[in-house]
Length: 581
Image 1: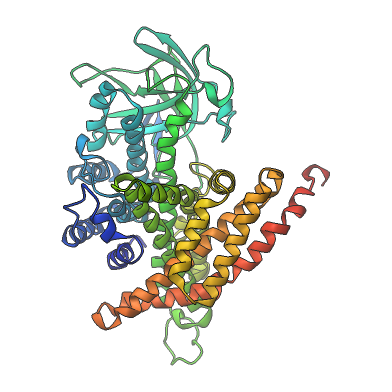
Image 2: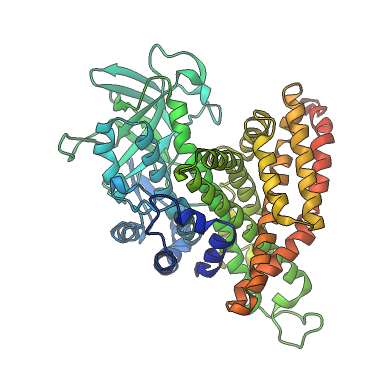
């Protein structure tokens, strides 16, 4: 089953109810952002996602990418789809107008990116990495580098990657060994990078690699890492392509999922050194790369939302089509969707997806306010909330996507465990997302260490206060916010003296935050839906109310148990000696 239909009405409702669309549209530079424009963009994007990208998803998964003598061939249809994607302006949409993009708010870009990801996760990764590379060069590159690379990367004529880790390094970038030796106006890069998404392919004329490497006199650790632009083909002064650079795809990884996305092992400098150009100042590469990584982390969180949506859609269609047994209280012939436990699974998927989407869109709206608000105090507050929530969007959304996709397999029963239906592909594809761009543990440690403990929980307390003002006398949410505040205080107090305690509790803390934020936003959506029930679009509105009711009854109660695990359960973890068993 390859069908995907973007939930445009749901997306529009969420933008308005919790994303802060009116506030974002009123920001300087967003004067042309109107309901008509947004709806037109979403409708056209939905057509491309559903009619062009989604039909390639299952065949691409089966065929995979092939490498021979360093040349990578993508599955049938991908190259022509990418050309159409670029020709229609979709590749350029998220980028700045200065480089040929549309310069639209993050809040407007976010649902469109969700559509690409839900329809074909493997395909969408190429644009995602390129947009991140554009951001890194735009923020830290020289005027010459921007002029040479950004227009063609924005259009999709060239694509981008980030080359971080190496076989011996994993997530520990302090262990990076790739070398950069100065030679005139450039550097010679030698080393091996692994897990390079879309590191080699046949859909674009050039690939612009951003590579972390060490200069000969660099200090040890992360403080000695620099960032370099290393193009697949060297670029002449007039912008035309020159000689092939000394880099090659040594192999492609054989993966659990996303088979149509080529994940390359890249070898630099087998014939004397690949030519690279320093970005910004020496030894500040990790700092610069975080510009790209923070962008990527939000979008990987959005991947979690998207693949969960896709799995939910497929499970829902299957459950309404499959007849098996006689559901309690129903006449014979009713589909399995009416069995109480299948209803539970479908509603659980829907409620969780909508909670994740609401959190992502809320965060996207704060990104726009932080970037463009003329009031420094408002911008500062918005940025603090973005910093707090990005690890939640990334970590909680991706972990939830695995759960939701697994539930989708369960709804299919035995047919979900075979590849024929496609439900298993969503589960396999989802599994990479909690690992990409920093594992859930890394996101959780960032959340408790940098985003809570560093400022004494100030940003978290601001978020809690804002939600508390909105939920009023809702007993369940008020209690959950109180618990969240208690946990924030415990982290702030415990982290400096006992970081091993907060580290052991970090994932539970991130999960608790994800549940509470999602619950508050879903309840806000439900209130908006109830106020509009007489105004039409009852399917979306009643769905919002049902999703919130389920979430508050079945998901929110987990908060009390998580709080106990956070504040006390660390003892069981830290007392455990893995080597003693």
